[in-house]
Length: 114
Length: 110
Image 1 (cartoon, one colour):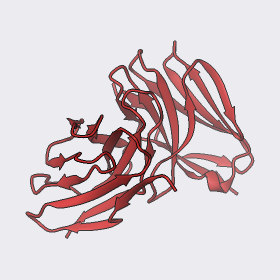
Image 2 (tube, chains in turn orange, blue):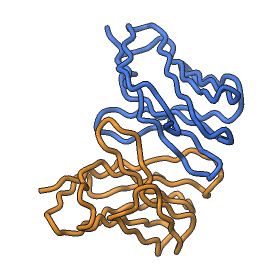
Image 3 (spheres, one colour):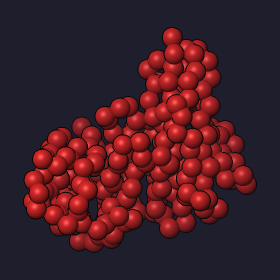
Image 4 (cartoon, helix red, strand yellow):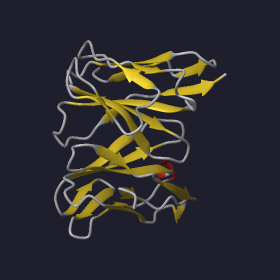
């Protein structure tokens, strides 16, 4: 089945540690996105990628990094510079950037601090 | 002013009633509008898209868009307990970026 797979489902980070969240899609979509959701809040855009080998900062990129070396994959690294990483992280994709089509989400990764 | 505003609720409606969820947005050039349903602990699920003024119906759901008033709403007819969730309004603005509201929590009571 086509879709977006995020892993792991739960992740724990120690102080000073970088952790990487995986996002894979088999929809042949060009555009991919990472969001963060805090309790009782909407989704905030961290990074997005319009096409392979390209990515742009979103509204809250500080303390995060991404890569887009393959069309199917858009991993997010939460670095030690992100002082408040506890949140629900969601990955999404669309066929093309700016096509006004809805984004569909993976099941998310819940990150907590040990 | 927030880019996309929703009342956080909770909105409580009895089973079988109509639930009305509202959303306003600030970017007058916005082109596309979406409603997502999010159950507690789960990821958002798309339930409705609307692109032009007027009503769009899909089963028990009706989305209404009024671009002049910068207002989009979602009606849920014959509300069921399984409709209890948080409903997120999302709007694509002129920069092609999707912006989400903070969501309205709906409770359907027996």
